[in-house]
Length: 315
Image 1 (cartoon, rainbow, N blue to C red):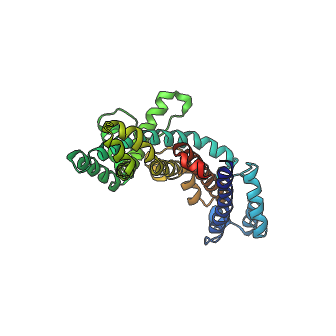
Image 2 (image 1 turned 90 degrees about the horizontal axis):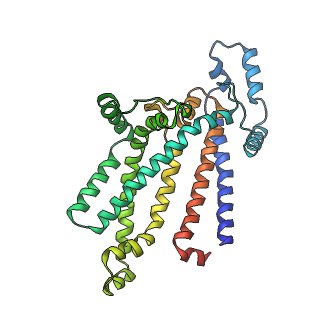
Image 3 (image 1 turned 90 degrees about the vertical axis):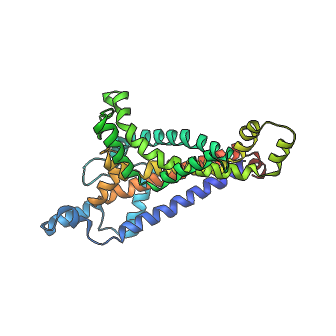
């Protein structure tokens, strides 16, 4: 088991190094002068030179990369040129919105998808299966931003149950903050639940065709017990894989939803930093999101070993 964990840690570290090179290189080869874009076309040469010096754009490329990586390792993410505050403060301020939103959406997605997937697999080829998978297909096909606008119209404009957008902050109380996150979480969760339900159904159907399942059924074990005790646990590996990917997506890929609901989260921060060409914010936030994805994938790998004892034996 120790060798298995060390191998995963080394893979994660190598991925971080490659990702840092890719992120830094992509932002460096973008056309245009960042200082010129930030100060405007009417900026004086002295002002441009002073800003380039402040941003470190006059240093050699290798030194800039090493300085940036060293800051990441010490959590010194630099200072935003647009907001004039440390990037770490910006990330902390926005993370208290994006992280609860991602967790709520993931819980909703899992609570909907796994029962639907089990229901469809247990009734394969029957009306319940067709209806469940038809609804899942519809959920995959509908864009989440369109679904978000529909939710705003129904629950915020028409029924007036929840706010249409904005975030009051956790200082206003847990209930007002959660009300502001309900519609965005549902808009994120339902398309992801549709994908997860289809994966759960496919994995269960594959496991239900295995020899040991047929043996258990031949011994007279009730179908419900076979499904929940034997089949579901062995079908969880692909489901856990999708769950890990979905959490990473929900944490890092909420740019559209956060803009639709006007939420001050990480996705909106990245979008604003890109439009304002605030390179230090873009680089640092993207790398933090990459690190979050790697950590989540590492936890998913650990869950594989917990769910399937064969992986622990092989390790």
